[in-house]
Image (tube, rainbow, N blue to C red; front, side):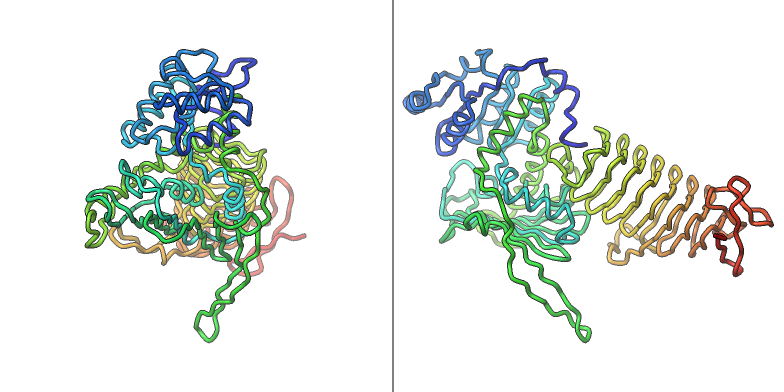
Length: 555
C-alpha cells in the first residue's frame, strides 16, 4: 500500500468542497500548550478544553478562542477534529468518544495503554471513515525524514543495526514507566527504518524511585531480515541525550536532536578493509547533512490538517501506532520478569503477530510515483520500485528489495529481503523470491514456481548465514511449479519446463525438463523450440552450437 492512495472509506467521507479544518485541543498542560500554539499559528485552532478550568480560560483568552467542556466540544458540528494531549490513561476513552462524535482525531502517544482497546479504536476509525493519527513526533522531524531517505536510497548499504539512547534527569512519571514514557518515539522510528516488525523483543530494566515503575530500561529487537536494534531509555541520567545511530554495510548515520541544526544529522562513510585476513576500520569524518530547519511539531500538526482536508491516511496512523504498541507490550511482558530489582536475564517475548507498519502510513521515497501498488499489498522500507511496475493483491515486498521498471508482480507474491528484480520482469501468482535471488531484465516466473536459498534447511537450525545466491539471466522463462535449487545460474533466454527441478547451472537458450532437469533441446530468444536447423520459426533468427552445451545467436 502507498500513503498517496487513501482508503475508500476515507475517500468516501470527503465532501466535494470541505471547509478548512477546525481543531479543538484537549489538554493544555506540559505538552498540550505546544499543540495549542501550533494549531493557532496554522489558523486552525477553534476551541480549548482542559480539566483545570482556569488553565483553559487562560489559553482561551491568549488565543481568542472559546473554552469548552468536553461534551460541548464534541457536540459542536463546526469542530472537525480534536487533538488530545491528556494523561495516557485517558487516551483510549477520549479517542473512542471523539470518533463516535464524528471527529477526526490526533492523539499524543500512546494510542491507548491496552492492545485490545487500541485495535478496537483502529477498527472504529476505519469503519467510520475518520482520520486517526498518533503523535509520534520524530517521524516528522526533518533530520529523521532525511535519514529515511538515506536508508531507502541505499546510501548506507544494507541495514545492519539501529540503536537509540533517550536519556534525561526527569520528567519522572508515576502513571507509566520509562519504557512507555520515553521509548515509543524510538520504536516508531526503528520500525519505519527497518520496514518490518521484530520477530522477538527482550527488555531489562530496574525501578529505583517506585517499587513497580521502571526508571531505566533497555529493549532489544530482532528482525527477520537480520537487522538488530536496541533502545536505551532512562530518566535517571546526569544529562540529556537524544541520539539515534543507524549502521549499514557501507556507512553509518547519527541523528542527535540535541545538536544545532547544522549537526543534527551526520553521515559517516566508515569502511572495513581486510588486510592479511584481518578486518581493519577505515575511519571517515562525519559529514553534516544539510537540513531545512523546521519545528517538527508544526510539521506534524500541518500533516494532520492536510489529512483532514484530503482524506489521506496519516504517516503515523492508528495502525502504525498499534504496531508500536505491540512492541511495547512485548517489551513490558519481558520487563515484568525483572522489575523491581532488575536481576536475571531478560525473557524474550515473541511478537510474530506484530504487523509491519503499513507503507501507506509513511511515504516510501523508493516507490516511483508512476508505479502502482494495490491497496492490499505491502511494501517494506527500504525498497525501490521502478516506474510502470504493478504490484497486485496480497503481495509483500520485504526490505532491501529492488524492483525495476515496468514489472508485473501477481497476486500473493513475496519478494525479499535482499532480492533484485530487473526491468520488464513478469512474476505470476504465488511465487516467492527469497534472500539471495537476482533476476535480470525480462525474466518470466510462472505460477507457484519455487526458489530455495539454503541447501539443507532444518526448522530448528538457523542457516541464513549459509544462503546461496541464485542468478537468473536476461530473458529466461521458468514454468509453473518448477523448482530452482539455490546456488546456480540460469543462462540468458533459457526455458525451464513446468514442474522441472533445476539442480545445476543452465546454459543460455537451453530447454530444461524433468526431475532433475536435463537439457532436451534449445529455445530461441523469441521462445520457440529450435529444430535441427537451429532457425527460429517465428523470427528467422539463426543460431549455432559451439559446444555440447553452448548455443550462440548468429548476428
